[in-house]
Length: 180
Picture 1 (cartoon, rainbow, N blue to C red):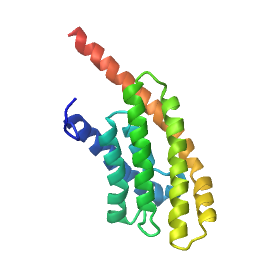
Picture 2 (picture 1 turned 135 degrees about the vertical axis):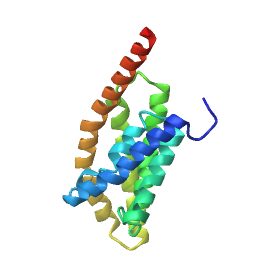
Picture 3 (picture 1 turned 120 degrees about the horizontal axis):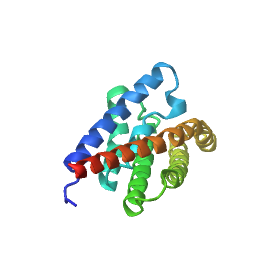
């Protein structure tokens, strides 16, 4: 494997999934569903199934911050953009590490614990940041925990079939290439 942070393939995947992560929230927010379904998470978490841990984590860290700077979504105050960036980067790193070391594991077996870990970190960070800026930390963290479930369910419904479809397509293309 190359010592470069991003290979050309990873740059292409990171660009495609990163652009999707910038666009999806805009579309979801047009119909007032962005805060419910966490659309930025979808492509960034899915990306981790296709590339190495460091590029997946770096992409997941940068995109929420870039989106916050460019569109104000997620906001920097309260520090939602920072919390999201850290949470998604951690989930992406964990998924990519597991996928790299256990490539035959079922997508749900990788995704479920990674999402749980991400939500635990999210709640912890929200609790800390809320307390630091004099918001009711328990209430804000609890509201985030409850409010995140539709997005978690959406990720569980969309990401594993997407990964399986893409993996199956790649396998078919590889087999067709061997026949020639």
